[in-house]
Length: 455
Image (tube, helix red, strand yellow):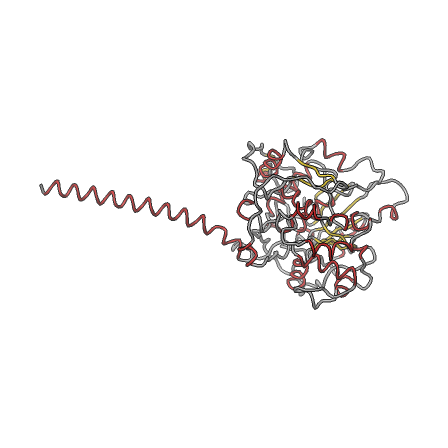
């Protein structure tokens, strides 16, 4: 009897311990799942790095917690008869799966060879409503007379199905309609107008009302007296440019694009001195002035040929844009005490201002830079400012050369070319810089851009 009692007690003890173990495993898994998003709200910074390639965007934490996901429903075409809408119906899922899974295997790349591209995985389930692979179709490329353009070559590459030739790169007064606001209000952040009310758009965007505001290369006809290809240099701030001696080559292009903390004074031999297009959001601009002031960054470059291209993340970008165009103080927000002319020069005018279209940013995310974690961080993630600038040039210029962008040997270089001492490249969770690096390798290998890489 005693033996039976001991055996029964032993079985009960083992069974109880097994149940506790299984319960702990489940609790740990649920805890991990529920806590994972919290790391996105700590400055978007991973603890293994120091700084990102650009100052991180720091959205208001209250907005991140309270902003709901858009209500799922099918995309509807724009109701404005003057504007056409492109809808990717049959290939949307396949293209988005390719954008996510066609990353090259960089384990065998030394920075000078093209990467080995892994085969695409089968397409996943239907995408959530916030992806919205439906876009306006009203952009007209400038006529340069060039026969060897990116747009002509892309059709013969793996990017042919992803690339939309007539995606609107810029937004301007024509786009302010109730129908367009209704359509774009489904998408948060820089991908739409979810946090921009219609009255705000009516008060700000109408100042962008000329052809200079919807053409990225608005002065091409005045610059060129003969048909030739528009050549654009797109310059990132990566440390690979230090001691590169690429300054004269960069300045020899028709157009020179720069972004955020673009310091040229004292670095002309490596990065050049001209800036025709400066891309920024108000947030990244202010962060750059705080972060890189000691290195010599005082604000955006100012010259007669410089255009200022806003990447609208918040309503403050629309307010800053209007203030700069009208030479008035910003109506409200963190910049209300700043004079825009102190930032962009006394000669700034509406003709020198441009603003990326939300459709274009969402298109880049959906088809070129789709992160694996998008489902969880859709209201935080966006392509980096530098990547938007480079891809905008690729959709506009005939030929594009990229300098100062991340390459597989990035650990050999400091974070920025203007760093006085070596600093590790940092990674933030509101951007996917490795995904972007893979894309630059693919575009270079496809012959769509010429990426500067060290031998």
